[in-house]
Image (cartoon, rainbow, N blue to C red):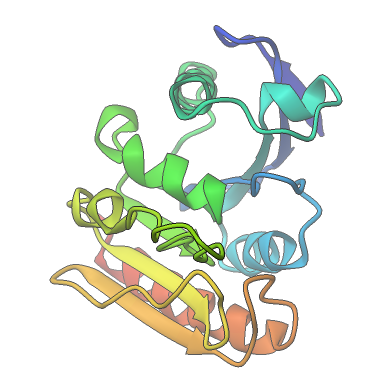
Amino acid sequence: MPIDVPTPHGPARVHLETADEPRGILVLGHGAGGGVGARDLVTAACVAGSLGLATALVEQPYRVAGRRSPAPAHQLDAAWTAVVEHVRAAGLVRGALVAGGRSSGARVACRTAAETGADAVLCLAFPLQPPQRQGRPPGPSRLPELEAVTVPTLVVQGERDRFGMPPEGLRRAVAVVQADHALRSDLSAVAEAVRDWLSGLLDLAP
């Protein structure tokens, strides 16, 4: 059921699927130019639902307003934080809060993990480094955003992702699937990676 949530930058829209006695909630954001219908997002949400988690797919205000060009990072972060706070205040978070998203949405979840109190972070197709354009220097790596996350993290990355391959870390696992940045080529592998990781998290949850 879609819920419009006020944020400092216009209303966001949350597509919520509840669960009987939920073991937690998975909150996912979309990529820069896409929406919450992306197949990897839907796959991850379905897996989470099958494990007894509630799920929330979040449309950023710029998408709700009909714009395709993403808002600046600080606006994305502020809107995302407002949505998570709303979900908490409404009593929709019971058990673990797993924040995440695909591509740009994964970056938002990483940057705000501490502020939102996320218990874990799920990154689908994390855009590690922008592809180099002819005649221009390489763009900056986004690895510091991943490294700043202090809770368990899973990155599901296509082996042909043009944005590169993030490294594993102390609390960060990387699942490599046969796909490009869209992660559409092997959704069963995406589902398996998410299921295994979430199952482990839920076993550890109090």
